Length: 263
Image 1: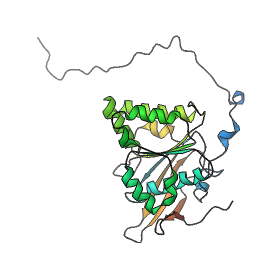
Image 2: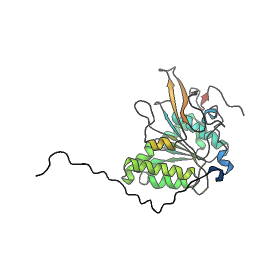
Image 3: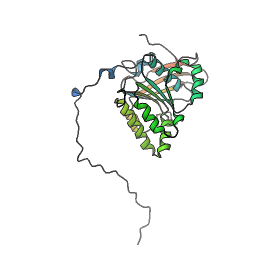
Image 4: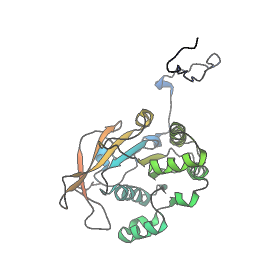
């Protein structure tokens, strides 16, 4: 007699044969890294003071940014990498949000962005995965991705992958370049704009949060035309959290902060 009720769920667990895998224990006193890995890349603004205790973004790190709609995420971060480029750093902007016409109008308002090398993901709609892998393999000091969600969505559609798989691909690619596994042997630092939840928190899996060196939000302080804008870090392995730095986009052509760094 057949049993009634719901069929039992059989979990699909991947079998891992660990017998031939050697365990590697590391003593940090035996590890050596290039000194350049601990020289921060500066934005030459007051933001350097909260990016790290030494001032700036460190090579081989990952910073994730969220923000209120219209607060100026792209503008602020493009301003950072434009300043880094002016100091001789090799930078790249991967744009999944804008096309060339949109960016042309942007540069009219912020001419300093006109020198930035940009990869428009819309130009590679048939092969976004291969395009991103190839351009990053060139090797960069700093890469700005706007946004994480748009780039991974394009790769997900191309490959027919589940969300977890495309997320793992992206994280593995970041880690590969963090560790200088590219043609230029550069420990790439990534700054990624990420989606946020309806509650205003970071969206994504715990693995994204664990692999992220720093997490910051750009917010409006208040409502209406007189609302001020600020940036605040909620996680930072290289610096402090909780300090707000206010900025303004009213003047045009530049991002104005409450204070400026003095060399």
